[in-house]
Each structure stands twice: as structure tokens, then as C-alpha cells.
Image: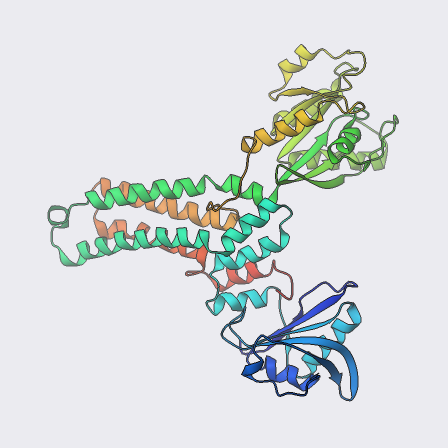
Length: 456
């Protein structure tokens, strides 16, 4: 925190503008050494948050024509002095300016260090800081809106309400322990029990949002599986509405995973077109088949393709076994040609629904999209101002708090001495504090911010 840090905050690809960002007590002083404003005016607090046009110099040599914004603490992203240098985009300009900042006293920022300083300096709590990376990685409008809600503090507010309620209960418990000889006669526990029950209900409701929240944030991982030549690649192309995968009548055309992303009802679908699953002596195809099986096992949803013009065989049986162990939708493809598959026999072997499709004639694709939508979020998923759990760390901490508060409630209902019950209540309070960062270890902090990009 005593160092003045610097990093490139934008992509180093060719672009109109690139940004080098510095933060720390000496950031303004350091940049003043290399920046000469066009108007030659002195840079002081009257220049706060005003864009200054000029040039970056390395000695007597002009490095770039730039705009610079000097921002004085505490009203900055990190609550430290911050300087942003807007260079011409491209790797050479950015690296030259970065090198000059380092040469004149800055040190290279670590991943996420700007946002970490914003947290440590009290500008953001930890859940808000984590939403910054969610905002950067958002692939859909709903994921973006969810991240904005968290950045604005919707989750923080709810967690602080929970902690405040637990603190009220804890205050009563400690008073009962310390200042009454027979607290169960003098201070009835009915109100404490009611508060605990209401709080548990509120915590349970928030926990139940985690599945919806994770879908908003991460999307749905989908694998298209089936034996060779059943139409997997054709169906992928129809879903994407473009010819992404090569389609031929030669078995084994697809030998590796093809991954594409689309947006369905505001949710990102990451779709894997897999190699046909079958027994093969071809070394390369065998690797592709193994990847297909692994992809299906790791998917949130499998689209299991059957060729309605071919009878069930041992390869189908193997695929059915894989699909029955996961959330799946069965697709009867090629309904435009003669039917040979015994559908009733197939239905006896599977535990998932079947849809009829003709990838060739583009029939039934819309029904498939609707089915996916309904399967995961009843056809609708909105990110209004709802408080959602989108982060697995938050979910685990909330579960831990819920468990400990439940144990506290069980104990006081059994008339366990309050000094014994108090332990679980304190643990619940601390677990909630892990979400906002009010009780968190340095190791966890480092792990969280290591997922950020350098410069943010």
C-alpha cells in the first residue's frame, strides 16, 4: 500500500486509445516528471479531474501525444492519488509510457491491485469488489445487470441486515449470560426464537437464488452428444444460425470439440459439438470420443441426438447410459425421412424427454430453444433489482451462516445453556462477514484478486 503502482489498463492490441493507470501517494508527482502540458500551466488541485493535453517525454525525446487526467485523493477509484494517461493505442506507445512510469518510481501493479486498494481503503466492500470482475466478464445483458446490482451494493445491504439482526440476538444473549442469574425466568427467549426463525427464512430465500444467480453469471454449459452421423453438427449450425461446423455424410468428420457461445433468453449458452461416440481403432478419433464423454459428464445439459431413420444399437445404449446420469434432452433427428427407430422402446430406456427435429429442414429448433429455456428458468429469467447469489464463495459462506444459526436455534429450544449456544451465533456472524470482507483472511483476499486482470 506504500508503493505507487502502475499498469496498462486497456488491451495492448491496435486501437484508437490506450490507458496507463497509476495509483498511490506519488503518482501525480511521478507523472509530472514525464508529462509536459501544452498550456505549460502548473498541475495542482485546481487540475483535479480535468483532462490535460500535452506530450510524454523521455528526456528531450517525445514519446507520445497524450491526454492526462490527474485525480487527487480521496475522491478516486482507489481513494489514493490516481493518474490516467490516454495514449495512442498499440503496444509500443503503451509500453514506452509504462516503462517511463516504472523508471521514475512506480512499481508494477499485481492482478486486481487497483480494486484491492479500493476495498482496503473502504471505497468498496468485498462483494462489490468481486462484482467488478463479473462486470468485465459479463457476456449477456442480464449478466451485466446482475453485476451492476451487486456493484451498487444490493447484496451488501442484505448481508448487513442479516448481520445486524444476528448482532441484536447476540447482544441479548450476552446480556442474559452476564447480567441475570436466571435468564430463562427473567428474560423469555420467545422473541429471540422468533427473530432467529424469521432470519433463517430470509437466508433460505437468498440461498435459493443461487442457482438462478449462477445461471445469470456463468450461463449454461451444453454438450451435443450422439453416435456418428446422427446430425450433431447440423443441429449446432441450426442453433447458431450459421455454418460453423463441417457437415458431411462421412462418419467421424468431427474429431474434436467445437465450442460456440450464443445468447438464449438473455442467458449465455456455451455449446460443445462433440465427436460421435463409438468404438474405433483410429487413434485420433478415439481421443475425440474420450473428449466427448468427458464433455457430457461436465455439462449442465446434454442434447442427446438419435437418428430416427436408424434402429437402436449398442452405441446408442452406451450414450443413453451417459445421458441418464445428467440433465438431458433427447432429440429425434431426421423426421423428414423414413422412420425406423422404435420410439416406444427408446422411451423405456431413458429418463428424459424427447423432441422431434429435422435439422435439414430447420424444423423443431424453436421448440428445442423453448425447452431449454423452460428447463432452467421456467422460460423467464430477469435481473431487476433482485438480490441474487451469483458467487460460489458467497453461497458457501451463507450456507455456513445458515447452518450455525440453525444449530443455535435448535440448542435454545432444547434449553441448552446460552453460553454454549453463543458459539454458533458468533460463527454465523463471522461467516456473513466473509461475504462483505469484514472478517476475511489475507490468503482468501489474495486468491480473489488473483482472478482479476492487471490494470483493474
